[in-house]
Length: 517
Image 1 (cartoon, helix red, strand yellow):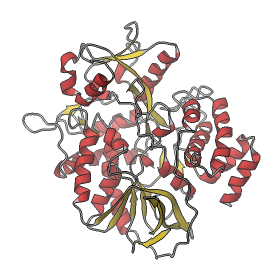
Image 2 (tube, rainbow, N blue to C red):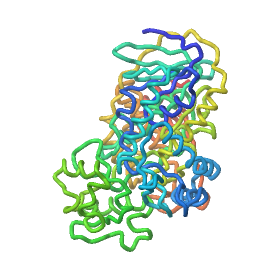
Image 3 (cartoon, rainbow, N blue to C red):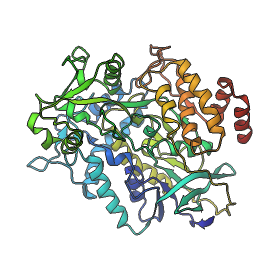
Image 4 (tube, rainbow, N blue to C red):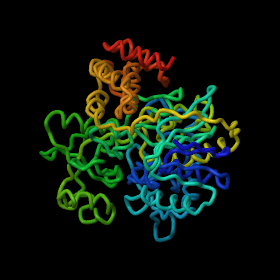
């Protein structure tokens, strides 16, 4: 094991949009950016199609963007946090353009704006038609690589955060088969979401919540973990991650039908552009009833489909489908996590020296159900606030770190069937309790599945605690909403105490609780 003193430099964990933007905003302060793959590879950011939301149209305003965000969030958004994001969004788009992002524009040079579900205006800025994430990663990674103050560690995976005297003291990582400890008092988690915990997901399979496991084991609070957004229209097939059929396709007029051609959302307020949780549940119920579901763009787009959505058209052709002539088979897939590390307005967690940004953070913007294309804008604007807070924080004193036991490389494959069954689109208390009993011994085992199992266990406990149905959390035992919405926070200790009550494997929970003590 090698030990390196970073001489006060902060460490950013994650090579997606949140991590890249945070590093760029910190320049020229020296910073270390750690990515387990090449920058942007296996980041959900790379797969983002629809675009990035900002009130840029002449008929739009931050107030309208805010109203749509709050409505989609189903009573659980932090209004102050949401207002701050939507007001910063237009300037952030201009900043991205200055960094080299080539957004789609009209002939007169203004941004070409798309429409997505639950937006009252066209406000979705996109690139390459349906390749927005790929273009942003290209531009930001290039900017990072030409910034001399950013040291890039690619192919390095952080396995643990090191805590001493109640604050972050460093990270334990593995790269090229070698373990290393990096001494630092400032760490940013920009590790993305949890879709890799599910069989059906649009996320890279490596995105199973490792940042949440790192934060939880370091003693930080997590919040709203039960809220997992399922995108209603992933291309139904064997490919993983599942190709996304962007909401923007429905924004152009595509409709959802079953195998008989029946448009089952025709009488739903908003129809195909209702909030994502509503559409995803409707599609899932059709599938559960034995029907197939298709997205039909033949009337609204027809031969223009490949021009407007070239990446989606390519995915379809690879699956033997011509969207100009054929309806596209779709099904819901885990797509985005509204919960995450509980952070304040500057991205600080409850653990001194630890920040979080992007999907790994719970800022309060998304509430119980994220408004389409608000995720990328959150990552971009909150990165600036995190960087400002990080730069102002004391680098801490250098600590001589002790050698540590290196956990095995995490693998979520064993957890996917459990998570998919327990906290999918519709949940029930008995299945959640059964999942908790199954997960506890895996968490206790210090094996490859232990970190994914820990994240799944925390989501399970959070889902059991929320005895109502709100936004993306639909609990059949409690189908109604509480009159008083509340955000629920959870620590690792609280999770293990709850698991001890739920689990029949008392010895395993005793071991876990003993370790925490």
